[in-house]
Length: 176
Image (tube, rainbow, N blue to C red; front, top):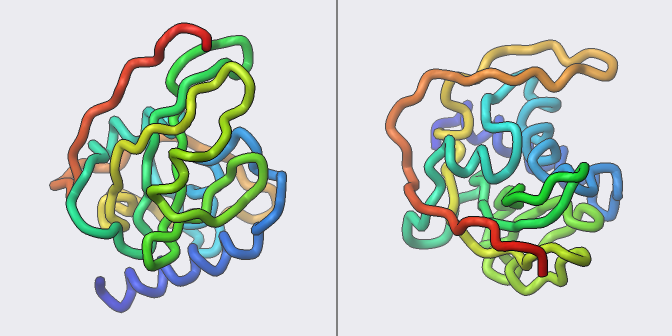
């Protein structure tokens, strides 16, 4: 990683650690990992509207080896949210040594492989590992942004270049 990228990732990791144990991001895992990059760095990144949508957009997949610090690790996870049953997905950010910080019931740290063993909420499927995306891909097309006060959650898509991970997803089955 470049020195600039190392600094961006270090700020994202520090920001995310400050939320350990917080329930503020329950059901908002994507917002949590995006905010980790965006808020302390004054930038806006451009993923999908859901963790699953971002995994598809970024073409997340098994890239081999341990994901690097700052990588997003994606999981398929189906359930009902706001009256709609679908694969919403789940995502965490790598802290190092295979550990990811993610918003589940509260913000917590688990090994990226053990997230699949978490007990899902009623009528949800357990997370199924999809793969990861490197920080360079997450930051592709990012823009400077002054989040000031509450800051909005604008959406858009940056330029698409080469990806460092590829994969596929399982469809959402009926209610469990």
